[in-house]
Image 1 (tube, one colour):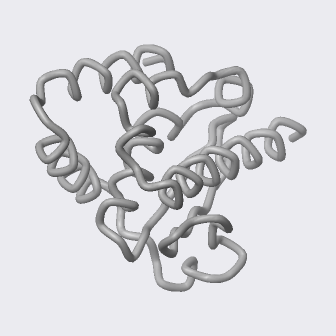
Image 2 (image 1 turned 60 degrees about the vertical axis):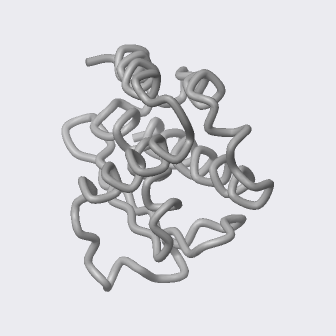
Length: 138
């Protein structure tokens, strides 16, 4: 499935909820879908700078695709990274680099985050794109 298709699916999923309490609950449920991150990967090298809560992101490049694993100590933040990984995980570097993140505005996420959490969201996206740029040269 393409990144665009995955974004459209998320937009549709979020449209089923009437208010942001339900959307946050959905994000918390999505956070539970993340693969468990080994504690050895929760280090300063994988820590995303600019997030209000600690968020770790690691990437592995295999068969031309990037596989991400992430975790956070805050449940909402973990839900945010889960959403991003639903879109970007197991994609080629080129797909990630060329993609936009319009779904964030379309689901209303940015406007329902505190300024610090919104900055953290963009720091997560930036780190995902940095991995894609780094692995695109391989």
